[in-house]
Image (cartoon, rainbow, N blue to C red):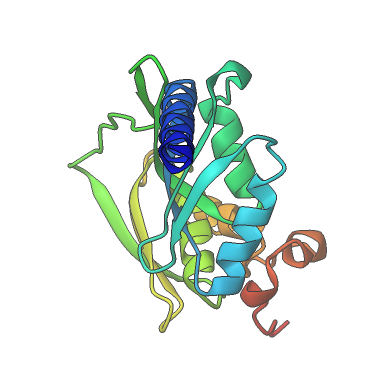
Length: 209
């Protein structure tokens, strides 16, 4: 009889725990973001550590190969899309597509419908110094933020940034200045020492001038 009582107590306890856990999950928002620049476990650790500044974060999962990062957070604290992306950048990485599934089922993304010009584009290749995948994400992001740039791809091996742009709206000079502004030297535009010093340790290329 005593054993039956103990077993019943355990079952009731487990049921109560499961119910409480289920209720808790309904009160949490789910976050997913693809992060550029995660090259090793140390990078993932740095990202996780930065996000643990958000008290109450749980269910953290990071895939280094794909850059997929996910976690849950109490819905009552209302973590915004802007704060999510800003925290990734504060960690030293570049956020791409992000998705938030709120506790009430509402879904938010940062995906934008961008119209890319298809006519009268000029293609050029610009040498931009850099070291890794994190540099690639940073350089490409800087280039496409220049008005008139349709797309930009930087090659880690050749250090060449291939850009398609509308020459009526911008020029190679402005694109080079954009790369330099985030810490990357080009053949004719040198980044400031401050912007270079702000680069992540693995992004510190050897400066030639």
